[in-house]
Amino acid sequence: MKKLFLSISLLLLGITLISAQTPLQFTQVFKTLEFVNPAFSAFEGSLSGKMLYRSQWAGMDGGPKTMGFTGYSPLNNYKLGIGIQGVNVSSGNHNLTNLAATFNVDLQVNETDYLAFGLQAGGEYSFFNKDKF
Image (cartoon, rainbow, N blue to C red; front, side, top):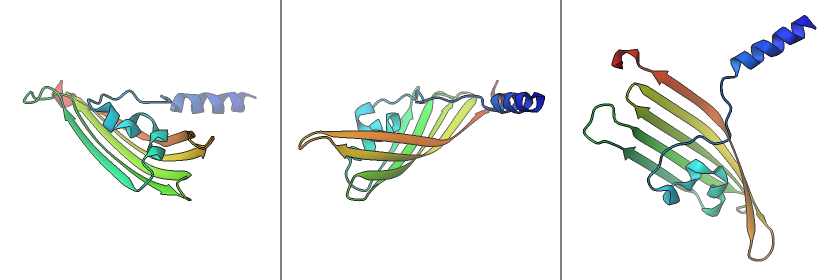
């Protein structure tokens, strides 16, 4: 029993953060909905890719910068889709990099309506530069 409790405790200590959606800042949200919701890629309907770059406080050293890319490809007559997504956010002494794979399903409810489901799984690397303090 003690070994089971110790194993579960160590596992829970290793998990630092699990979240459903990462709150990123974008200025053109309607053009980059794939970054907010992976199910939105199903509406593209064809092979697609997007890139974005956002620089706030231009000209100031350490100002917030967001860079990202997303790629999507439908499979099986546009009912299934896979994609890849990467985002890098830097602000002052903090740098965050996220890389994820996306999967979505597009279901036709009736003649005119569709229902899309999306799943995203990936990893995130966060780095603090102590030299910039």
